[in-house]
Amino acid sequence: MELKPFDKKVWLATPTMHSEELAFMEEAYKTNWMSTVGENINEVERLSAEYVGTKYAVGLSAGTAALHLAMKLAGIKKGDKVFCSDVTFAATVNPIVYEGGIPVFIDTEYDTWNMDPVALKKAFEIYPEVKVCVVANLYGTPAKLDEIREICDRHGAVLIEDAAESLGATYKGRETGTFGDYNVISFNGNKIITGSSGGMLLTDDLGAANKARKWSTQSRENAPWYQHEEIGYNYRMSNVIAGVVRGQFKYLDEHIALKKKIYMRYKEGLEDLPVKMNPYDEKTMEPNFWLSCMIIDEDAFGKQVRSDDKALYIKEAGKSTPTEILETLAKYNAEGRPIWKPMHAQPIFRMNPFITKDGNGRASTNAYIEGGIKDVGMDIFERGLCLPSDIKMTEEEQNKVIEIVKSCF
Ligand SMILES: *Cc1c(COP(=O)(O)O)cnc(C)c1O
Image 1: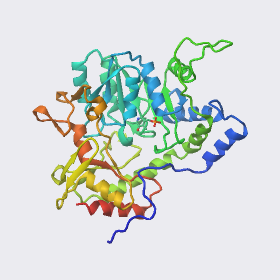
Image 2: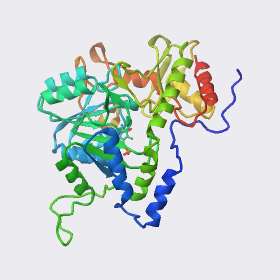
Image 3: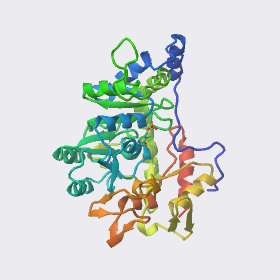
Image 4: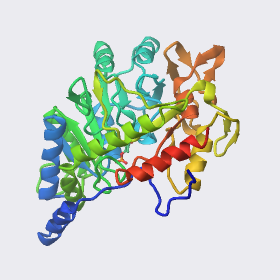
């Protein structure tokens, strides 16, 4: 098959609108609730709590704002160490630092590409004083949330679940976003449903929900004037943005079904290549399949080096590298993305502790740390990549993406 570039760019993940969004935005306009108060916010809070299955939901300006308030609710103080997923978007981690906490990165497992419960156990042996743990569900695949919850409970630690990428995914029949004491979802533009931006804090704790709502609106006290006893933030969700999310909500299940189709088509189409899709345990989890990713088998992984801002690879027959595949996709006008670069290998966090399942570890720039211990997160970053996963991509377009990937081996 002769391959020509796509006329219309094939994207990683873009918003998919259905027109109800516009009606709810217009309602905000016509009723003049062009503010951080209004019916759309009330409805989106109700829908989020109902769908995910928590008692309370607080609408906020972003998932990052929700994570920040979760860190405050967890009581992080200056100098406190906080356990955290290592392979994730920086927004999982930064709010720890806003509160003066020190992120301690927990290595990843191959089973789910999420926090390794075995490494988490080790981390509690090394730092028994830690009282907060933040776990992310990468690309819409749940972490082993019951094991992680159990380990945290045993150590009296608060669990924060970053379900920004996994809205609608379930683990052992239960929605992600319910396993933490405080949970976060995001309506950022490329998430499974979107408000263009926006986020939500989810909890069963009424006191916590009330505190978050108060902090998010500049911490006004109940007084006739602007009275303040605490530091506040301008983190409340806009009623216009909430209109977009409100219109999207009933399409969440449809979006998940389309994402799953994309994942399954890749799985089938790439079957004959020495690659695997991002894994999940069919018996215990149903991901939302937000992004379809692949990882190249070790023996088919070509030579590739990455510095802080450049990558080079050597072309070898039968082998490939994420760099080659991403460059080739771009050449054909399709957008892929590297796996989240592990936080422990980021210049800003290079001095932070990093714990592997074998005990201690140290930031590495390749997949092996001193003594031959494998750094799983770095290995997945080196051999893996995200494939175009836009739900508006046609079957034909996806077949071509599959051909482009094949042409790299
Ligand atoms: C998108 C995302 C966030 C942040 O959400 P925003 O709404 O963009 O602030 C946090 N964590 C993860 C893992 C994400 O993918």
